[in-house]
Image 1 (tube, rainbow, N blue to C red):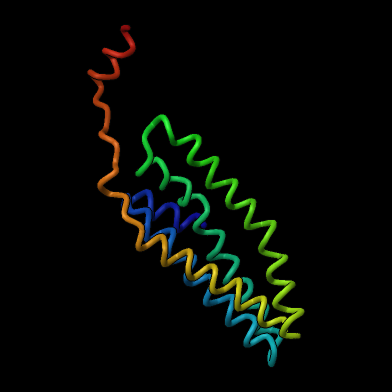
Image 2: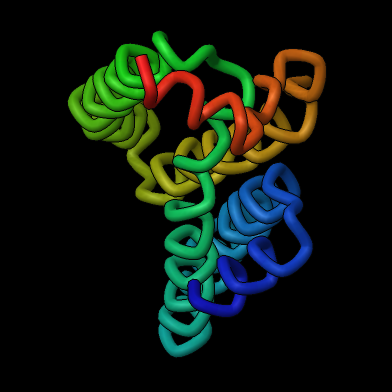
Length: 148
């Protein structure tokens, strides 16, 4: 988590520092479920790796909305993102349980979660935000606003 965030801050790059941990975490989660069937030790090892990568994206993710939202809409945009995330927290366990019940295999739930992580990473890579960047306010402009 620290290494990813530190590298993102040093390079100024955000998208890949969000996307790649999600994709790698999704692949590691899939390997955890698949290899865990024959070797519980490998399953736990890849689960730990998956969790490490999934947690590595969180802090950097919240630096993305200000890059493409205006100053006035950043708060409500981040609130919408949070609300949709909470909706996923409600529907995710339901869908995983539904598919496990339908197929009779716990691996199905892990596959669904893995696909979700990989898709989130790919969507982050595809999303374009460079043209929406807000102009940086210079120091004289800030002083002018502060005087009024």
